Structure formats: structure tokens, C-alpha cells
Amino acid sequence: MGGVHDLGGQEGYGPIQNRGDAQAFHAEWETRAFGMAQASAGDSDWSIDWFRHCRELIAPADYLTRSYFDQWMLTLAAQLIDSGYITLAELKSGVPAFMPKPGYPPATAEEARAFVKSVRSYAAEIGSSPLFAPGEIVRGKVSGSSGHTRLPGYVRGRKGTVVACHGGHLLPDASARGEQKAEHLYTVRFAASELWPEAVDRVDHVFVDLWQSYLEGV
Amino acid sequence: MTSFNSQKLSQIHHDLHEHLPSEPALRAKALESLLIEKRLVNPEAMDAWIEMYREEIGPKRGARVVARAWSDPAFKKRLLANATAAIGELGFAGHATGHLEAIENTRETHNLVVCSLCSCYPFSILGMSPAWFKSNEYRARAVRDPRGVLKEFGVELDDTTEVRVWDSTSERRYLVLPQRPEDVEGWEEDSLARLVTRNSMIGTERDLSPSRRNR
Image 1 (tube, rainbow over the protein chains, first blue to last red):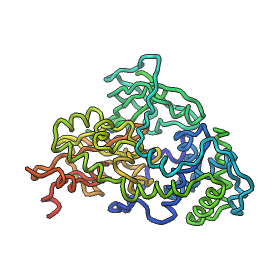
Image 2: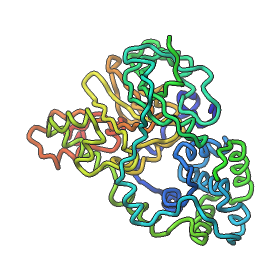
Image 3: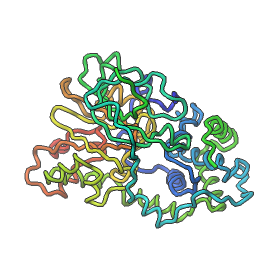
């Protein structure tokens, strides 16, 4: 989706602030927001891509001004309201009106500890062979897809070189719609000079992981 | 059931903005107590997550991996071939590192990692991401003006050194393997690990030589 979250290459952003800051959390509420988002119950069809999409749908002015953990918290609340597990009225009043039956239950402390050690794969078997091979020139599709997508605006219409094919990986666009679909995933190398008018003389490159339907042959 | 309806979600966000306090601490408190009362979250699990990311899981893990790669050529080879398996040898594989790739700095190249679309980060190896990594400024500028960003972090590169920016758009995550400093001949792995900073494994620091720090 071409939203405010698609920040890569946007102009007008100033110096990076707090470069020496190494703290994980800066306020008690941030730790609570983090813990809640990680440990919460959820719907059985929840996916990380749906979570990312729901974060992207925060109103643009809020997206740019509310901090990371605040956005996590808003996203969690929005998802729980969407699934019918809580209501806005309950959040406002603080009074629970009913007990929900979530698709998957809240994690226990043991499950939380096991989760951080579990290695999750997003690779998926795929029947077809890859359309593009390493060394091939490809172009990012100009229009992309509506809804959630991981095709950044700055590579749309730009030519790059396939440097690796990683086999089938779950397509985020589909996961964010509640569907399971795999496509070949590639790492594509774009010359800075192809992407940015001011970078004509630079030797630099940007590497982006892109699914097959994001690309077209040249 | 989940609606998977973008319009509906936008409306919910709008309502949350309208009706909840703008102070995040107040919203966090309201949400947490409601979720606990409705048994949608287990406070002990929340505490476990917070404790793990405060105490246990942090950039010292990544530093250990880098120091091992500097000391053990066979490990380095395995790390560059399959980083998820290699960090697994040290017990560090897990949260957001199921598809980890290590990218090596050389004399001719410098690597920099960003997630321009959200804030993807290899949590199990580097811990919680620093605030600047999640900032709009870094996400916007790292892909377009990496040299300007690096300069702000004190890294100056000549025009012939290639900057490679890695935008984490898939579930693949990146760990920069910094160059081993030249003035650490004979150093033990533990001492080497103490030289390795979080920023050097994201790419916003380059020279880790001890003499540079004493300067």
C-alpha cells in the first residue's frame, strides 16, 4: 500500500536523533506495551503481516508522531476490537462487559520463554520453478498491489539485478488478507544511480527482498 | 473472526484516536487492565517477555557471534553460508532470526541495514532495536542518503568504498559482520567480543579497533 509508512527515500527528514541511545525501553509504559503485544491472545487466523498492515492503517498524522511502542499498543487494541474480543466502550470505561473466547489463548510465561527460542520459517514448498535467475535484470512493478505489500515505492519502475533466489516464501500481501500463498522470493540489487537522481556518480547499491509478483522481466 | 478489512481497521484507529487519552501511559494502563480482566493476557507472560528483553537477549549475543567468526575461520564460513544455523550453535537462534543472513564488511564495501517499511530487526541476536533504528528519519534516509546517515554516526567513507544498504522487506534479517581490527593480534574471543558494538552489527559504526577508541 502506498501509505505514509512507505518511508524509504522520502525527502525532508532531518538528522537522526539520539544516535548514542542504547536503551531498550524508555518508560515503564513502553515495557508494558511491548509485553502486552507479545503475550496477548489473538485470533486463530492472525499473522505478522496482518499486524504490520494494521500498523500501517494508523492515521497518517499519528503514524508519524506516535512512537514505536505506542503504535504496537494501538495496533493490538485495534486488532482485538476487530476480532470482537474487546470494545471501545470497555476501553473507555475500564469495565469489562463480557468474557471473550479468543482463537488462541494468551501465552503462559513458559510459552513466552519457549517462543523466543523457536526458529520460525516462512519458507514454503512451491510447485513452480523460479521465473528469474541470478544475474537477470528485472524491474519493480509500477502499480504494485493495494492493501499490504512489501514492494517499497522507491523501487517501483526501477531496474535491478537478481542476486539470489530463496525459493518459496509466504507472500505477505496474501497473509495480510488471511490467505496462505507462497511465491519465489528474490534479493534484488539496485544501483543507487538507478534509484536517486542525486546519486549518479555513486558506487553504492540497495538490496531489497522482493517476491516474484512484484517483479517483471526487462 | 479477523475481518481483514482495511477500511474497518482505519475506522477503528480513528475511533481510538478520538476516544482514548493522547497520553500513551494512560492508554497502556487502560488496555493492560482490561486485557488482564478479560483474561486476554497473562501478566506473568508479559513479565517474562519484558525480563528477557531487559536482561538476557541483547547485542552481547551478536558480539559473541562476531568474535567467534573473527577467531574461528570454520565458524565464519558456516556463518556466512547459513547464519541461522551458525547462531544456533551458540544457542541464539529464535525470535525473528529464522532466515538470518550475515553480510561481511570488507576494505572495499560497507554494509548498512534498515527496514524502510516498518522496523524489522533480528531480535534474538541483537535484542530490542535502538530508537533511532525505528525513527522516521533513519527509515527514510538510510536507503537514499546512506553516506549522510553514516557521517552523522561518525563513519566517513571515501567515494570508492561501496555502500551496500539492505532493506529488510521480507522475513529475512541481516547481521553485519564488521571487519576484524588489525591491532588485536593474539586477543582472546572474550576480549574481542567487548570491542563489538550494536551499531557495528547494524552498520552505523565501522572501525572497531581499540586504538581508535583510546584516541
